[in-house]
Length: 117
Image (tube, helix red, strand yellow):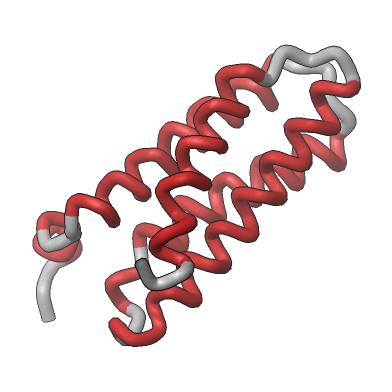
């Protein structure tokens, strides 16, 4: 069995980019959740969804290659959940621009992976 650090280096550029973008989203979300006056339920959902995306993408290589698109599709679904939570926060007059940009960049990267392109 290969150590985890060898698996990480074996990532393709596209998968590594998606993982890095997921980490960027987690960072932006954590900064927002720590500082913004957002309802607790929205904060919790946003935090769980962003963290879940990073976890999924960290483990995607453990999936059978022919089924990886399912993991990417689940991550894309969570990214949409994040974006919806950010829209709700925006309606509460919270500045979500940084997190929104990170989320949109991640969704753009995940879309072709989730649809087998």
